[in-house]
Image (cartoon, rainbow, N blue to C red; front, side, top):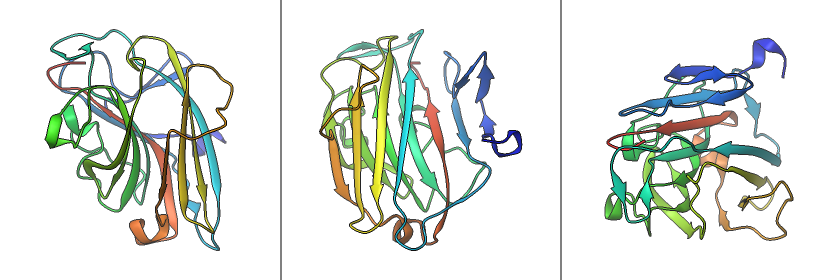
Length: 202
């Protein structure tokens, strides 16, 4: 994107070399980065997003699968410069009129409707109690690069999430759910970006 259209950064998000660091590796952080130009969801528009992420320097408390918390989200929302709650909120909780894909690395139990401490979920309306989840076999906070694809079909309203440890797009989705983005957002104008959070672990 053009320089003026690059991410709006909030709280603890910053550029670190040639990557976006949504939160630093320390306690009690909340950060986000969103496009500053809205995309239109009008006329049943479809989109496909692809990105890579890496979760490093884990520390603090441990859950059942070891150190590291709390994860990141890919979020579509109506505001370009906000972050939600830290810790188990993953920088997303409290962001109304939004849809997020969470890459969750901490087991919050029933608080987050979490199946374990290493899963992908679909969240609505700033609520981190995922409406659908899928367990990931390999720890996402292993320090390696992960690749994800988020696809939305504006005609069927199918939202699909793919996840891989290689840059080759998987044939099948790890999560699929029918979500009308324009209805969830209350508008056809949306900002796209990332949130993250840390708490007693990072």
